[in-house]
Each structure stands twice: as C-alpha cells, then as structure tokens.
Image: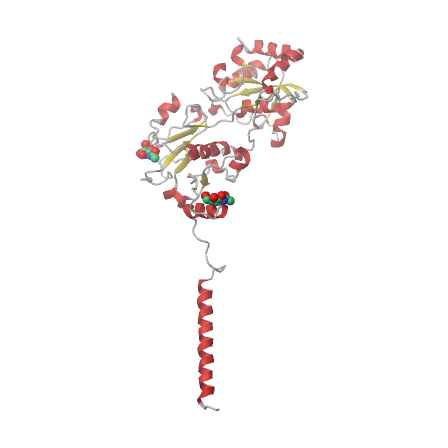
Length: 370
Ligand SMILES: *[C@@H]1O[C@H](CO)[C@@H](O)[C@H](O)[C@H]1NC(C)=O
Ligand SMILES: *[C@@H]1O[C@H](CO)[C@@H](O)[C@H](O)[C@H]1NC(C)=O
C-alpha cells in the first residue's frame, strides 16, 4: 500500500531523530570533562576525601586531617621541595604549602623574622582566623638579631634553636641498643682544621677569633672556607673534616643552647670537635661529655694546644673520644646553604601535626634576649 504521505512522514521522523541525536551529543559534550576546563580549585577537604576514597571505598573511615602549615615567605628565598621533609626526616604529618590563597584555611603560618619589613607591611593579614597560630621562625643568636618593633605579642609559637622554644630545632643523636662495633676512625693527615665561611666582625666573632689567634701560635691549624679564600666544595665537607684529628667547632657568638651544626660535622665525620660556645654543661644536654673538648676546660689557648699535641701522640687516649659511638648515632646535617631552613620547617610540620593546643607567645624579645 502506498501512502503519499509516508515519505514525508519518514523524512520528518529522520530529521527529528537526527536533531535529537545531535542535541544529545551536544549536551553530552558540554558536560563531559575536557582538557579546556581549568583544573578544579584545590580544596584541602576535598583532597582528604579523595585520598580516603582511594585507600578505602568506605567513606565512613575516619580520616586523620593533616593541619595546613603555610610558609608565608621562603626564608632568604631558599626554596626546597616540601617532600624533602619526608625524604630527609620522615616527617609527613602536616600539609605544607606556600600558597597564600589558603591563608584563611591555614591552621598555622610560619613567619621568618629576618624577612619581616620594618613597617610590618609584609606580615600576613589581620585579623587572622580564630583557629590560626602564627609561628615565629628565627635561627640566629641574639647577637645577630635585630629587634623589629611590633612583633612582641603577635605570635603563638616560637621556632628556634633554643631548647625552651615552643618548637626547638635540633638534630639529636639517637641511641642504639645493639652496640655498633664497626666504627673505624678515619685516616688522618691533618691535626687541627677549621672551616670558616663568615668572619664579618658584625656577627660577633671577636671571641672566637681572639682565641684562634692565640691557639694558632702554639699549634698548626689548617683553614678552609670562604673567609680564608680556600672554598671547600660541598661534597668535600665531610671527607675534609674526617681527615683532621681535631676540628674547631667555634660558634660565632656565645649564647645558651646556641650550639649549631658546627659540632655535628666532626661528630658525624669522625673527628674530635674542639668547641667554643656556651659552657660544657650546656653542650652535654645534646652530646656526650666525652665526645668533645671544650676550650674552657683549659686555662688558656697554649694549654689546650699542649693537650692536643699530647693526644696526637697517644693513640689510646685519642680513641676514647669515640667510645660514645657504640650506642649513639649522629645524623648528618644538610650542608647546602639553600637547605638551611629545611630542618626548622620540617620540625614545625611535625610539631603542628601532633599539637593543636591554644597558645600565645608574649614578649618574645624579653624571652629571646634574656
Ligand atoms: C575498609 O574499611 C572497612 C570499614 O571500616 C573495613 O572493614 C575494611 O577492612 C577496610 N578495607 C581496607 C582495604 O582497608
Ligand atoms: C595566637 O596568638 C594571638 C596573639 O597572642 C592570640 O590573639 C590568638 O588568640 C592566638 N590563637 C591561637 C589559636 O592560639
């Protein structure tokens, strides 16, 4: 049977179907993700949920929420990869970021003292969220600290080499129960060594330079470092110290707890540190009393030189300075200049991951300079 209307009806049907298919595909195209879409804005909460879904399909699983730690400025513009905290110190319990757009969500903000402008114009904005803690990061000794007015009562936590800081920064020796028997004192071809990078008088180096002048009259000291135009490549740092029987670990200024990586180098490398800094008792809070020689143990530089000469000839007496290694292990510190703040920032990360308590840090200068 032929119906004259059939062909046109068919045509209408085809057109309608086609139109439907086209619009449907357009709609589908519209909603399908494409490369042209910008990546979704980063939201920490979302991030945490996704990772929980990935690790376990059940959303009821309790998720440890890592606090956000915002680094407001990169100290001295020394940048590093935040994953270094995990890599070097196995620290992974906060969410480190330098993205200021997360400010309102940041649980903690690190502010580096030396980079704060005199007019305070580059501080994070106020008022801060009620849950947010500001962390004062400063690693220089009081001698090398400029009091920027207006910071006295702004912070919640102090991050410093001082042991009584809210977050003390220090690589500590670790104990090992199983005795370590395989330590061998490295081969020595130098008696006393000293690496000096900054000898500017303004850094308070008068004491150590005076002592060095006197000491070098009585014993040969091999000098390295920028200050003496004998620059040491970073890769030579530990091997060079290892090749010296004694190493001068002289701090630039003398303050409680101001005991820097200068003593860690020889302890790690297998040399005996001769320290100048706070009293022996203070050192013994961090390293064993029989692992170093303190300049204050001697009435003057000549007596110290005599003692070092004597140890040089007495292998057994020298060896006793390494007895501590049997049950203690030192950790090498990072030596590149650009790595100077990694330990401090990672230590802060570890701290805020474990401590959420309320805290106000008042009169920070009274504390710091006392
Ligand atoms: C996921 O979570 C459920 C419920 O808490 C638990 O029973 C299951 O063992 C978990 N599976 C994995 C792979 O962790
Ligand atoms: C942080 O310290 C400031 C200044 O003392 C204080 O006003 C604020 O309440 C403190 N906040 C927290 C969460 O500790």
